[in-house]
Length: 460
Image (cartoon, rainbow, N blue to C red; front, side, top):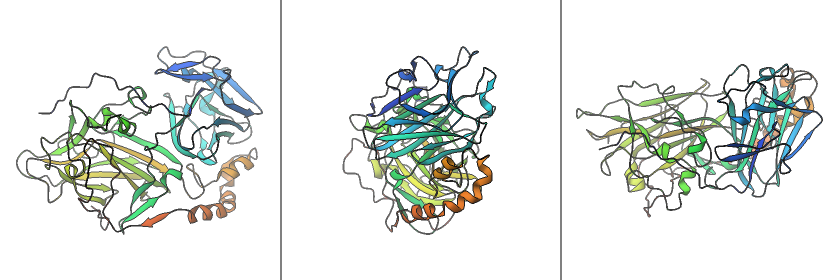
């Protein structure tokens, strides 16, 4: 019934961002990557770079298979900043590209530096180290002024920072919803104000499917396979591929939240002997302690042969986040995608867990659970930081007085007033109703979301 062959067609992006800054920071010529043009610093359209001392650097011995934007870099020996003009206020995607190469007696793996994005600490004491592959750091930043400013600050005098390429692009308007659902095991609450948080993408997973490259994603994201994070036995889960059509709204806006390549693949729990398996599929993701996380789970019923055959529970960090999820009662059609956003605290274990599994309504010979994709994003802490207990103001003021690490206790004290102010603005509003799903547009109107029960009172 289901098709398991690999998709051969390509998924081209129809999204055209109003703000679309692509910079190859150390290059002297423009570079094209996946039909996207990264302009050089010498291009008159390049953003303003304010710096006392920067150095363009070129890899003299690049691999013949390397991506061109990673063969050059810009070096910052003093605090420097890029200012990107913004035409459209709202959420913007910021991607920083790093690849440490050796050139002109300078080994970029030795660099250690901080990065600030619009006043948020994005990276603190960051070093690429001896990683051979390139590193991409992705952020979602709210912009309500006419500029997004990115600062690079060496961690100490005599050190330096670098970057190979920068992307600053407008995000689709429906990509980050303002409301998520707080999962804490005690009560049902909404978390309001997600769009104004700084978010860092920590994990983006194509469950049951292959790697999805930026070329095959509508907003140039990378999705990696789930196998290294899956903790369930392979005997309990099956990978599925759907060869039919995904039911998006006409115009394809929903592809900006998740591409076909994600919704056409899944991992499922199935039973074949007439008995429901009392097991969950669980994925475990390493995370930093001390932050809240936005967990976005993607679902699309590509496994059922008719409506009403799939019921399952959804868990986040062991807490029952959604009980008796009936996909057909939400979409009224098969192969129709939607997502839900949960907000969760780390549990001090350094691991974030998501699970799906059967309920007492799960049917024999049916599907006991399904998941198509997972995204996990770190949320800024009360100091406005994604890089530890330090605020942006002190990063700028501390240079060049030695290693910033020795100033952390002093910094924390001086940032206390800022922390308290940010906490006061954290708009968390209690709710007592079932989860309201952030549903992707489908071709079927009149969706009733009052099916299933939000249940956060206990752990699985």
